[in-house]
Length: 311
Ligand code: GUN
Ligand code: FE
Image 1 (cartoon, rainbow, N blue to C red):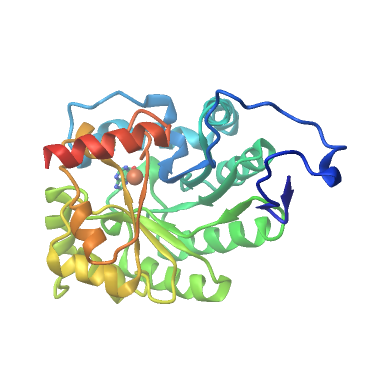
Image 2: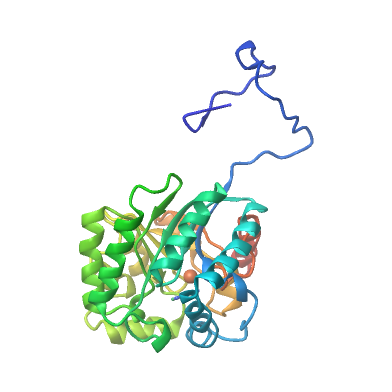
């Protein structure tokens, strides 16, 4: 029995006040809370397991971006998202933090479908206005911000279990103007933020070139006002976060989404999770579908244990 979303108690025998309720006998079963997937890409379900010979930036360009570009087509999106949601409903995850694509109609559709599913989710319309292929790139920061504002206004108050989260893809795909505008939007709408951080050495080096004068990748997000503090922030991967970036994660109260299977599949490396925990950084698990090819967070738990042993 749940009251206001909380268990009303544990009893040896059924109290009289609950005698009228149906009883399900779970003897011989393990009863667990629903699991949380802190980081996954809904539009990547269709190609999970493919392109795993590549590292991050090549995998994005040859596999991920061409697939996500298909989500201009709402029929394709509906079919693909239905398959993903069917899998999630059959699995142990009850809550998911999701990247959609940059497309406004398909993102709203995903929110409607997740709401209907009974899963609890945060969903992000992805922002990307540079270093992306022509068919998966917003024209400029202003257009990306205008679409994001329209998406927030059109979905405001429509859902019970489905809420928006600001989602700049990662620094290489977002111009400085877009990042500044997103920080303003986030203040206006009071939203959490999710993105990627220090996943792959080539990516980390690219960000250092794109953001001269920053002390680390995380510092680039911080400069734009999108890195914790009063902004609840999830950063996925953090494989190459050094001591200084770890200290910044802790200081800013940023949540790390540890995605061990993706980090192995894309040869990204093994995240320094023990260092994060010792520094007081809060860490959750993510499938990072389709960097990871399994959606279950039970699988992510076992992958995390194995990755820690290799480290
Ligand atoms: N960095 C930017 N975009 C992505 C993505 O789609 N997947 C992963 N694993 N990393 C990213
Ligand atoms: Fe990711």
